[in-house]
Length: 234
Image (cartoon, rainbow, N blue to C red; front, top):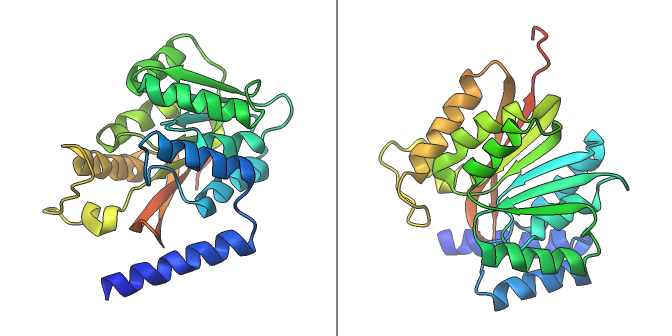
């Protein structure tokens, strides 16, 4: 049954991508470059790329923050939706991935809109806070899961009221809800980090959040969607 379900999810993935025009030459070149670099199944699926693009457009975001660049696939989806004077800052710990992302971003003609910052996200986020960076309108979190709760705390300090926060891979095939669950794809502490992230989302009055389960060619997972509150009573 699991194999049949995954085959169906993959079929629907292809149908949605083809019918809604979610693939184009530039994006395919990014995926090809990723595979050549040994990055397989690391990029978000096309439907989530379009979702992020739509969030940028619907929210009128002018400043976007991304934690976890990898090859720049999700970066390009979001940067395409920015206004002419918009800015996207993306953080990547691995210099090799950062260089690949810069090449892909340049190939998409988005170099003037995107800044790739290399370093541990906890350090680079803290540096943004310390220097008083202008607040962001939207943040996409897609990095090591064990630090998601710490990322959220720093992102809240960098976000304007009403800003959108999206975090990917927060369901992990249901393992996040199982106290004894395991996910071999995660580093040690990954699931505990996600659980702390959920707790912070639920307990912190500065943010209102939900989580959406998804199925696709990678399997059963999901993303969190949150809004930074503006201080009003709800």
